[in-house]
Image: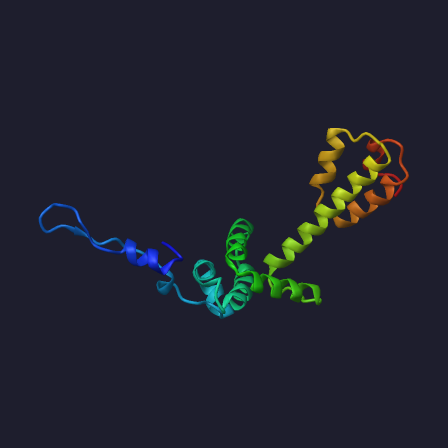
Length: 182
């Protein structure tokens, strides 16, 4: 498999093995063998094909449409495949398509797929957890490993918001995890 048409042609040339009558013809998948998937329905029905489409055609004119189609398909994938496929798709798109998608996000675009929403939420959670630790460290409060691990493991935005406020007034990092007060 290759995204380069010339390499596909070169790799698909028959190979004479030297055995009479036995010539090996390699099976090669090049960009011309991969459909350009820009339809959300097609992408949802065959998410692996839209990933291949992004890899084969993500540098071309259809890159943005392929990326949007993938976001629709990602909603039906388990978290592990969503993450892996999403990374492959995003890394395969040209810079212009990525810029366009970023502009859509900045303009208040509401993500339609669970894939995109989950990554936005994950980013917010990670940022708030880092903010809790940054406040404690800025106040020169030692943060024990168990507190650091608990903060970084939290997935509750409301809890992290409480901890940010609490980090500004406590004198010992262990107080952060106390259940009384806010």
